[in-house]
Each structure stands twice: as C-alpha cells, then as structure tokens.
Amino acid sequence: MSVPAVPVPPWLEPWFQVPTRVELASGHHLRPLRAADEGLPGLPVGLDLGAAVAAATARSSFCFGVFDDEERSVLGWVTLDPGAAPYDVEVGWAVAPEQVGTHLAETLGAALPGWATSAWPWTSPRVTRR
Image (cartoon, rainbow, N blue to C red; front, side, top):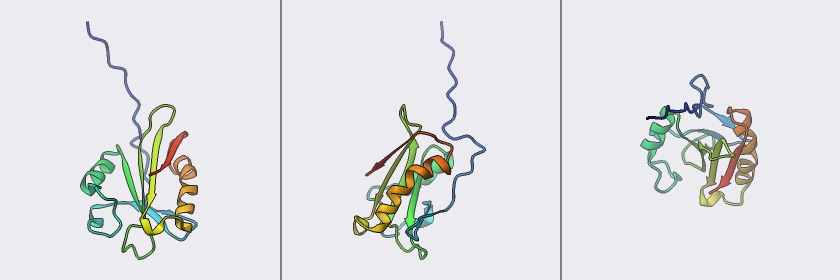
C-alpha cells in the first residue's frame, strides 16, 4: 500500500519577482551575483558561481553581492536559502575582510531582517552573520 504524497508548498511562488537591486543606507547596494562576476575580487572563497546562478534560476537559493557604484569588487554577500522550522528563510551574510567593523557591515546586518520580510514573501527569517 502506498501513501499519497503530501504536496509541499513552493518555497517561492512563481509569480514573485526577485529583487534586482537593493539600496543600502551606507550608499552601497545589493544585487544578485551573475556569471559575469566571475573573477571579481572579494568573491567568497569556494563559491561556485555557476551553481549559485543555476540555483537562482531554479529559484531554490539566492546569492547577492554587496557593491559600491563602480562594482569592481564584491564587498560582501548575502545568501537566502529555505529555512528549517520555525524559519521560512535562512539569510546568511558576510563582508569582505577589509569591511569588517565598518559602517557597511553595520548597515548590512541591520537591513537584512526587514529586507527579508518586506521585499520577499517571508515572515520569519533567521539572519546569521557568517
């Protein structure tokens, strides 16, 4: 006897439009990392950019970079992954070593909980500095 599969609601509804740019109070911005970012200084060690882009395309995980207006290096990054109960999203973040302790790091950490619930369809994020 087989047990019917219980439908699992999608983590991110197909109609939802993923933010493409988020302004930070520090004057920096977040945007999704893309294949063209390969080779930029500051990318996280061990990041498989191709896999990150593929996951974003599949809407199963997202990786954003933190940039200044020139976008010549990655100053930090934010990941969004499905959360484990009671959280509906796991938001991980870090800044490049030279940004630790700066206004950018402070601003980014303070902005993420509100961003996860106002720009995304989630209500209970878990935000962790990595």
